[in-house]
Length: 94
Image (cartoon, rainbow, N blue to C red):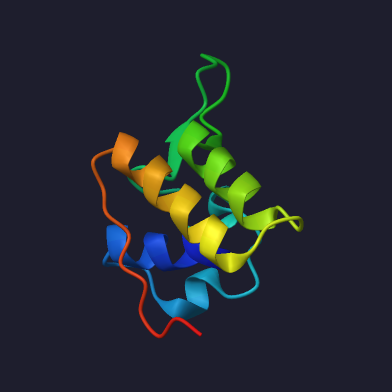
């Protein structure tokens, strides 16, 4: 699940690696719980569906851009996270 998988494990201490394994997007994570910054409940009064947040959609677009380098992706993710008052620490960068 790219960077969002790592974020989800850090933002929701109840999640385990097996909960996110094979999932493509944050709203696919089982349990129906909201993960701060990554998922939200639908705005519709007829549905309590879990949706990805604008942050998640923007982070996925950065990550999935095949026309950029990992360094540019890291820079863009840092800028995006700064808007939400979070910091990105890259570990084991290759």
